[in-house]
Amino acid sequence: MTTAAQNAELAKPVTRTVYFVEFQFGSATSRLSTANIPLVWGGFEWSGVGTLGSIGTVEESDGLESRPLNFTINSAQPAWLSLAVGSVEEYRGRAAKMYMCPLNEDFQMVGTPEQCWSGVMDTLNVGVNDESGSITLRCERSEERLGR
Image: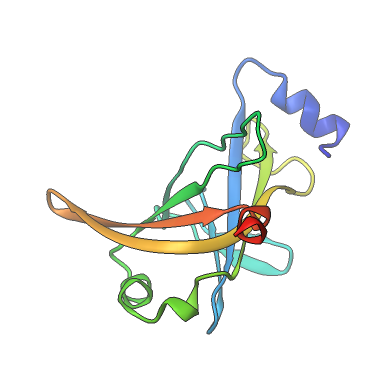
């Protein structure tokens, strides 16, 4: 439910958007954003500067099945690598949420970010491409786990 001001910003020919992702791991909650700087929102600091590399395409299907959503995370941070090689109980089945907020021409948030996706974490995969590495966190909608 975006506000009128957010809708006006999203209707412009050039739209700037920031996404916030919250992963509720067993030991701590991680908050990441697609911004190039750390942002404070909701009383928390959301890490930026390349921590969250990319977000996969959100796909909906005509049937009852849901599609997974993949988050690619920079593996240069030791904390993320330890999650990838640690116990699956640290992440599997735990909550993940994504929020969206349009930005104005000065790259300031317009209104309060709106939740646009929620689900649970499923698998973590570590990949190495050339000289860099990445971690792909596969998440799925909560309803998908209920269907199992």
